[in-house]
Image (cartoon, rainbow, N blue to C red; front, side, top):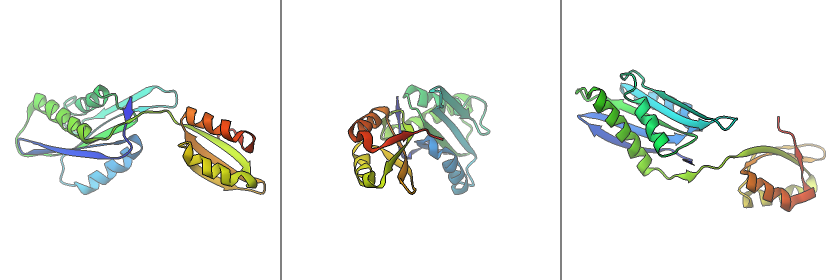
Amino acid sequence: MVTVDSIFTDTIEIKQSKFMAYLMPITLYESEMKRLREKHPKAVHFVSAYRMLNEYDQIVEYSGDDGEPKGTSGKPTLSVLQGHELINAAMITVRYFGGTKLGPGGLVRAYAEAANAAFTVATLIPYEKLYTQKIACEYSHISIVEYEVPRHRIEILSKVFDERGATFQIQATGEDLENFYNLLGRAISKMPCD
């Protein structure tokens, strides 16, 4: 499986209708939908689809036609995500109507072509499951933790200081976390996540 970490877009035109496809990380889906609706008030459709993993590692899929005939736009868009094994990714296609009806077959081809166009310009990255954990350390070990975190591809989500030291909420792959823990050993202690 692969995913993306930023927004990629491409535009196609068929019989004067313009299809602007945006491929993005699932985390940006809602804010990007809002932004696109505000940016393109004269567009007639905002077709979308996404694939993501839930907390049980099950694939959750969605497709929406946004007023296009049922099954002619969201499903072909979702099929592109499935076909390229994209996960934790969303696609939004903005359509400006050009005056000529495309018919059901034409719509299916147009939305699939637009989605494939955005996929073609995307930089794909291998999907890796990330784990969120909490660690604590004394003040004397904070600098070594902060030094080693980027070297192990770990992201600090939060840092809280108290009278004994600091508590970090971190996120990384299982392998990177294991290497980090093996290196720092007793300098840190793992804590349950809330």
